[in-house]
Amino acid sequence: MALKVVEVGPDRLEDYAGVPISFQVESILKIDLVDSGLGGATLEEVPIKPAYLKDYDAGEDGGPGRWPERFDLAKFAFFLALDGNRPVGAAAAVYDTPDIHMLSGRRDMAVLWDIRVRPDVRRSGIGARLFEGVVEWSRGKQCRLLKIETQNVNVPACHFYSRMGGRLGEINRYAYAGHPGVAHEVMLVWYLNL
Ligand SMILES: CC(C)(COP(=O)(O)OP(=O)(O)OC[C@H]1O[C@@H](n2cnc3c(N)ncnc32)[C@H](O)[C@@H]1OP(=O)(O)O)[C@@H](O)C(=O)NCCC(=O)NCCS
Image 1 (spheres, helix red, strand yellow):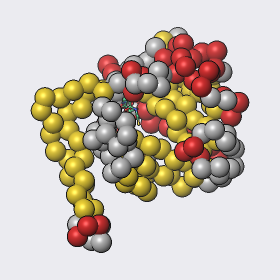
Image 2 (cartoon, rainbow, N blue to C red):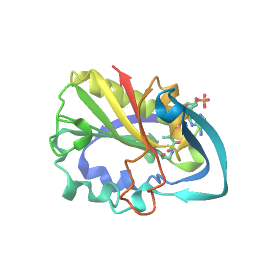
Image 3 (tube, rainbow, N blue to C red):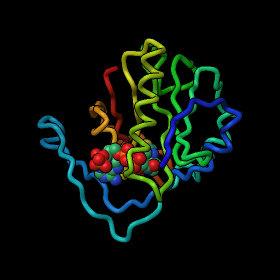
């Protein structure tokens, strides 16, 4: 595969959205508090039967095609991983944007907003290449920290972020309580020192 990662503008969001983000949930990280949390928490990978498909684009947020109408994209960056001309992966990052709550108003932190690799070519290093692109971009914006949100139902992503050097910074068992369909999920927020 002749892979290259390129930064693109929002005019390429249609190509971006053509890379599926969905994945099979075959296991979850079960989180248990020890002594109500005073003794910390344990995370244990347990299988889920039957497995089910999770598709972030299918939710109320609508996926990349709707980002232009929902957000000020001035300080977003978009990356495509191309095999020849064919998009096989994509990632987005953002910094210094007030309406992105994940940034908490900080200017020294970037957020990995989205990352996705075509299902047929996952586990071949494309995600890592995209992640490196986001890290370089974030450093170039003088950010010291990269923040990444995922969930305990996305075990592949958790392994990926851990492997990329991320460290688990937040376990929020109540984050999605008001959101039908995902209320059972636990928010896991990873941080990478840049
Ligand atoms: C998460 C994702 C982007 C990773 O991309 P990828 O191209 O498959 O990842 P890479 O091949 O670069 O993996 C790099 C390392 O991460 C780890 N890793 C990646 N996927 C893994 C998995 N399913 N299980 C365990 N470790 C995994 C491995 O250590 C891997 O190195 P190795 O293959 O040499 O062991 C991809 O799985 C994906 O598109 N998932 C669906 C979309 C998604 O969940 N996005 C994140 C939303 S928060």
